[in-house]
View (cartoon, rainbow, N blue to C red):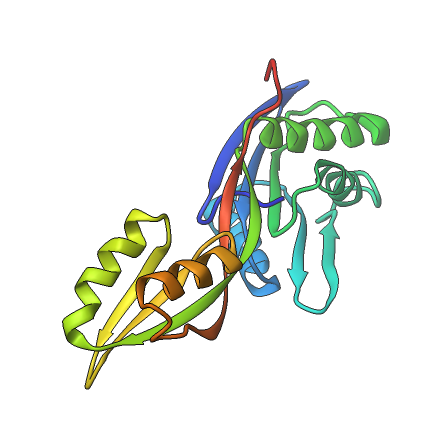
Length: 213
């Protein structure tokens, strides 16, 4: 699962006078994840720690996972944050927990709980989407037929993502059922035009929140 495209939120947790401010952001690559961490560090230069964790997908390879304790005792911040992120099933996401020390030491166990709780709280309030990959097709038509066929495709639930006009009109099409799309085009053109594969695209389908959340 992913966070919605462009999603970013802040949430706050107070533990024994220490303030934990959590950024949760959708980040689609490692560069974006590191930029999110740098952005929080620049935004809150007065804070003692900017601990972080992220998971980003890499096409054809294992996801990249990184975490940082940023000066907290080893294993008390970044690692538990990453574990919470893993357990949520959300990828292409970055969490940054900025901490202002409140004068009371929390101990290693208290730090682990605080950083874990900060990330859990941020994730609990965040919407989810599920990425689905759909095929794209192009359909080339005479100008005289393009408008009518476009309208009929839309009426039958086929998405027309783009129309380009040159010597002929080229429609870019997508649907959740490739076979149905091909059948509709064959019917509307009486077999006179055939869609050509044109790659894929990823769409984001909202995931319903769990009951009682």
